[in-house]
Image 1 (tube, each protein chain N blue to C red):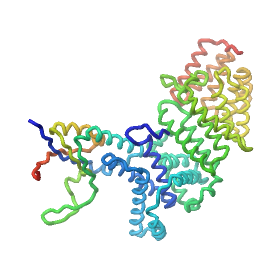
Image 2 (cartoon, chains in turn brown, green):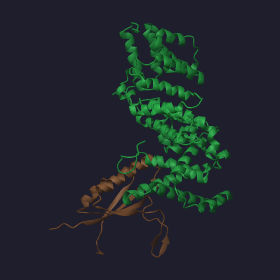
Image 3 (cartoon, each protein chain N blue to C red):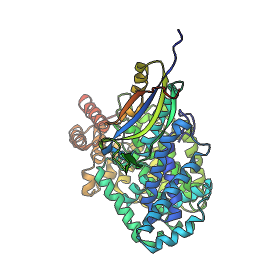
Image 4 (spheres, each protein chain N blue to C red):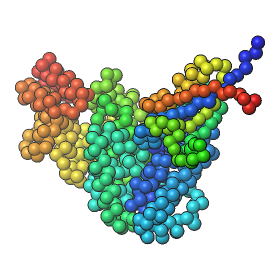
Length: 118
Length: 427
């Protein structure tokens, strides 16, 4: 039986207190760039690029529009992406190798897509 | 200084170097009094690059991309400032600037911008140590923490020095109006001194932070070359300074043994000296010989060249080195130079001759507490067979030696004292 790929939405969260994080030096940023680049290259067959999320925006709740909070104020979602792979276990494995793990207080929420829209 | 070969795709220190280039370019546009704003904008641009380049791949012209993002950041910040009515002067400047938003990022202009920044930071109102910190931050792209680590200073001390430089630049309007580089040319001696101190700071100590301190030497050489490539900085003394930096850098690897101990010249494996760097150093030394002036950089470069060209320690032209130290001492009088001259004379004419130069000296108190003074006297007395005096001086030197490597060296000499009290056979 052919195993079909499953899609997972990944939400990359940072601790709100540290976001925007304490500025890294250019040298550190270059190291971060290299780490992200290496990670994305290593798993390029399974990673579908998402995007970063800018701070701000609006929340519509019961017809009322507010500018937040989106979720608990303790953390912010800084970006999202999709992993298309065989299993949740594999998605977890990929995320564990992600450089975001170097950031204390950061977390990644992995959710399987329902596939309702086909 | 490598421009290629570092995976994946960005040259070593690309972000750090780019930081310096962009801050210099933006500071020309918006004034040196805006340097902090420019630094923040460049910081943001680099952060954007970290966020977006890994996914999409870096843009074809990375520098232009970063410049555009940083420029928009500055303009945005100025617009916000204008809205909150900070000052009318900003509005004026902004109007003048917005028309040039599409300005291209020209390589040769950026080089000039960096040079201008180097001359700006040589403002005589800024204390030397603040100038160095400012150069490391603004031109080299090191963070406050990284500078503190490299200068063996606390974060606060570095921050204070940085603020001192920034405040002075804000208060001294002559630098704010973006003077032509030529107008700043009279500051060349100060600029050279900054680079010289930057280099010595990186060179003067070995372990434990050898690798990162070496970056100070690389930065000094990089900025020196930048200076040398421009008519305003291409003076014979600039070539002499570059010669002295290359000729000393050539011996970097040979100065440290396998265990991280510092090796004196005599103990170094000369095959580890970098022939290519020596070649470059010597060619700068030749170029420095144009013109009438003979500066301390000429003297120091010539001394370094003598060491580099000598096939062995024994075959070193000590007489020539002693003569050069005498010239150096005349150009830049310092008991340290006399001390070095005494070492050369001791090699040339024997330890007694070296001591004869040092014994009548009345060294200033700072020198008496300086371990090299004690270490040299100790070594010369040891060679003369005056074991007791030797042990006294070497023990004092040991207590004051700043690094483990240097302590190790003095311990070896002290041991040599107790093993053989015989005067060293002189040729």
